[in-house]
Length: 313
Image (cartoon, rainbow, N blue to C red; front, side, top):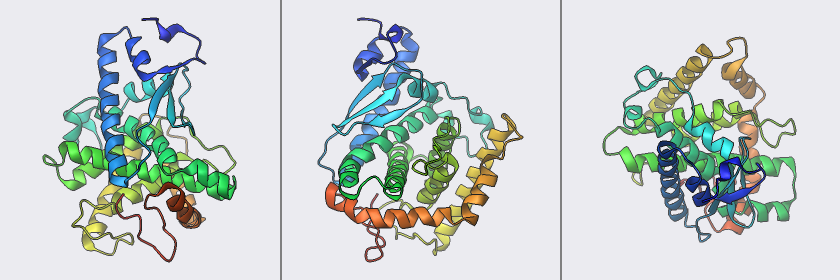
């Protein structure tokens, strides 16, 4: 097999070709494990959403840049850099993690598996939610594109939670599964170059992570749980407080081993709330979601007439 690792970064190969080209057998095995988990996550997401699109073709661009992109033709292109980022991620040792460490003792690559599942599920959401078709219909207004990113972030967060729940839900409590999901997404996005492009289309990761936190508070454990988007039930309120503590602990741990002079997520979260950014994005999504439902054939409508239509995600 040709060694694709040393070929021009612009080349795009199949995932199988990329895996076959990895000379380090240990690293190759880790990559295989990560993507086996990704495929299971996508399959579960597709079935749960009732999508008829089918699973995407995953390809790898031999670039050290850390990016992922959904192609309107139905494929997802990941760079070698984003794969390496997930697998080489430096996080606290499981014994020293700021949240419950028990889950991370099961597999040293658990954060990598969940992080990559979130990245690929985000891109898959753009495909099966027909975002490209909706954009062609509504136009490329900033609020439309922002709503797409919001939708993909939250669909992916719920998908990763469901995936971890299916793997260890019989061993660990619901809140432990949520904490592990939140932490894994945190460490992946916190250590990526920020996506904020000053156009407003891709908000800072701090804002996106805030919404992911809220999603993991309200996503239901199973079909018997009452959907509680306003956190009115005591059980949801307890869950909210514990997940906020997890997010704060992760940010403190990150700042403890990185640049302490930067503002960090704490200041950015405060500014985000003060300018009502956390509700503005919801209103953007409420305007776009009926069209996503119409074009994709999946439940999405979060308009005022159907405020809780997205509860099965």
